[in-house]
Image 1 (cartoon, rainbow, N blue to C red):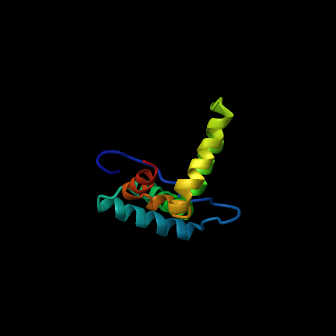
Image 2: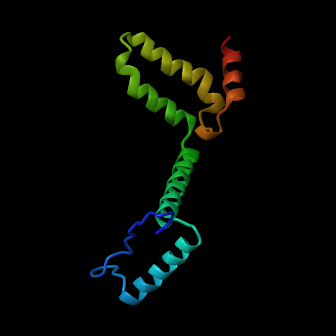
Length: 124
């Protein structure tokens, strides 16, 4: 019980592959009880840790993704909605001529306002 709320926490499988022995289950239950006594909600703590791991994995994926990869994926996903074939070709040519030479190989996470302004200034 924490703040008047009772929550059940599963500790794992009791039988089969990766099963938790009764002795280990008691140890884990004691650890969880100590957390609750300290005012920590074990389920919320677990959910927060999982969310942090997911965010870190997504950040790592973004850090590995180049601007060119994202731009090409965007063009591929949207070009069917562009009726004019010339418009489709213009998107790819403009990106190849002005954008990719400057930031095409850069991580999409690192692209910010000064990068975009430098590209636009060369076009304007």
